[in-house]
Image 1 (cartoon, one colour):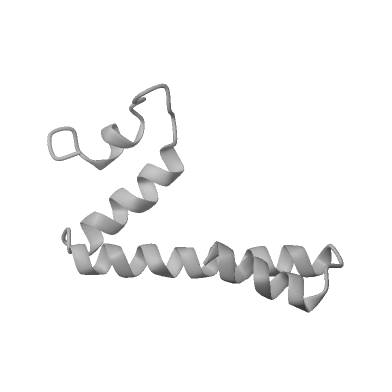
Image 2: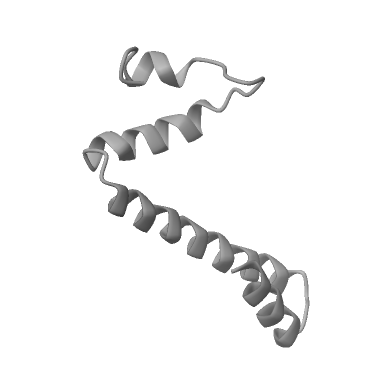
Length: 77
């Protein structure tokens, strides 16, 4: 990314993967926070917590009991 720039790096394929949205979000965050490891770790934990909450909502809508939802979220988290 340092050599090519964010936009060119976002469109590049690596190891049989093409994930431009993921690369744009994380690359943009790296630039926004000036490459701060602490900020990136906080952002990583924030997205993990959001994914845990969304998993709980999906399981709740599927009709599972609260105990099963809680156990699933604890294991996932």
